[in-house]
Length: 124
Image (cartoon, rainbow, N blue to C red; front, side, top):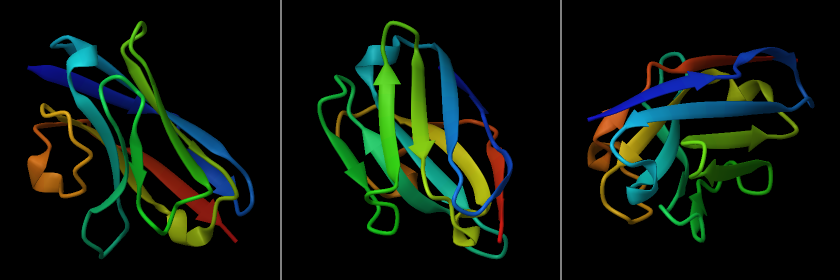
């Protein structure tokens, strides 16, 4: 079992930055891939980024490349998502998730555990 708690969301203006965090507990943190997904109102949940257990390999959705950076601290059991130059289209609930494999899979059905989500709202 893995428990995930996201934090760091909020209401921000376009062009600003946010750093989302995901605190994990339960199963040994460094043994699985961490991913971030988001779901905007009226839309399906979509992949944002993933990072392998060692932190040496990452993957990003094309829509966020260059603005989002995923990272992890295995000593603190946390994963982070740095979001720069926020756009109104980034408005969504952001979820962190665990893939017990060690791949960089983008489909949400591969992820075994999910946090409750943190709301990010970007005003224009």
